[in-house]
Image (cartoon, rainbow over all chains, first blue to last red; front, side, top):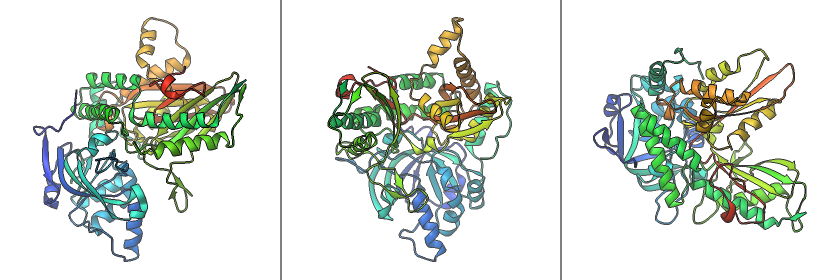
Length: 205
Length: 309
């Protein structure tokens, strides 16, 4: 068994021409193959962006109509453009999501795992969407990255803002523009289907 | 009395961290492969397919399975008859030097993820040191070294509770696991530490996940009618019930959330029922063991989590 991108079940997306309207039309659980340029950032970069915006400073990169990928890559060796670069937990960026969507021009995000209520509300209010990549498939994802360069906060090392140019990077729409989250609907559906434990709404995180 | 050279311990630790950065243990891959065959949820099945493909690519390319190459965790069992004739460093310093060497390896550099001054400047130490080391002094003339590189995503989901002695521990776990979300990259292994004191429970939960995935053996034992120990009964019950939660691979919904559940217990105070949960995922949250230093790990290292020679 070898996983390869499947154009029958997944839709190709051109990040270089992506619009808010396209993002808003994505549906929960839809499989996408991302192509083109995306920015990266995780905990430290988000904190610094928030601090800079609070002080009225100009960011090193323009996020308008861009997608951010929550990742801290391994450094490349030999002919690699980047080392393994799988998604980090998106939930940690929840408290920055409204700020990113409303103050930087960002239109979508890629990470791993679920989003909390604050991020889902921000996504819904801004008709954005959140995509998940598979955590633990870092080397496979890295093979989809065709170029990488640091474009901001270089002093943060692996937490710097990179620009990646990707080809057929596999992701799934995990929160759509209506705020429907597959990390809620999926486990609920399967718990009921398995039928051994009665379903009750999960306790808030 | 066995003499162990400082350089041999350092290089063994370095080799172990390199090795686990790109090889999953066979027992884990076997269990994940079986979960793939069983899975009926298309989204979960696709996620497991990506993880299995990624695992093979990493093994072939000798590059990390996951970009999070973890914080170094080392469990040292030091024989009481061991002597360190040329040591200029403490054991903690030797382990740190091994980690430093592994993470800076020019053929396969690993990610430095450790920050000093955790609630201040959070400055990267650049070489992934220091490692967190746990020591046991045991009879014998061996040093056993278990190296684990556990990612921050699964560590973030560790849980602890001090239950009342009459509380339902299984119920607490079944309420808690869904709150852990998918950040620990299920399907994986859940470590449970029960009893002792708060720090003892957490250490047992962590140490329990170093053992190989062998749920199929436990199921076979139960099916044969052989009497199970209390921790074994709990493992089976938790495995069935956690998987019935339907969380599935990557939290997308599916049949397999845990490949195995590990339980270690220890006597505790009459007033307490401490319980700790430490999940681990299909990532470098894996350990290897090296024994009877000096001997190069290449010659006796097992790809299994508990391969002890």
